[in-house]
Length: 120
Image (cartoon, rainbow, N blue to C red; front, side, top):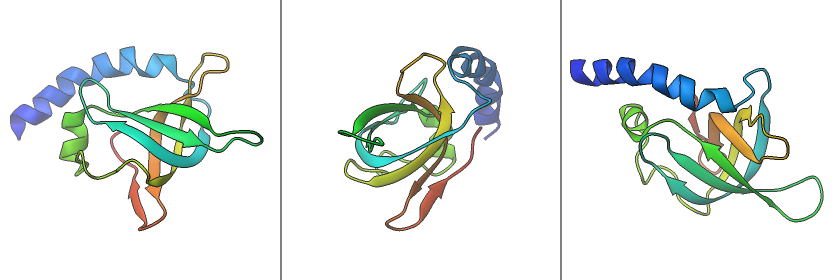
């Protein structure tokens, strides 16, 4: 347990420097859609979500999440979420104009009420 804590403390500055600088921490965006792909991995996990737009076809969003090691310590496994799950996600949007990318803050699966709000 101590080695896990040391690893997390050692890796957090790198994560914050690399990943979070790409996102606008002053704004939060909410998307709702269907999970098409999930990759629980290091250094960052990724969700691909087909989210309904205000008009027209669904947009594909890339949602960046924490490392697999961190998520596992919070009870999130490769099978926690599955393609086809309907999700509501809040996150910080990419600073890139027109980019459909978020840094995940919360995720909820309304079908059973499962919610993740930790680790940030």
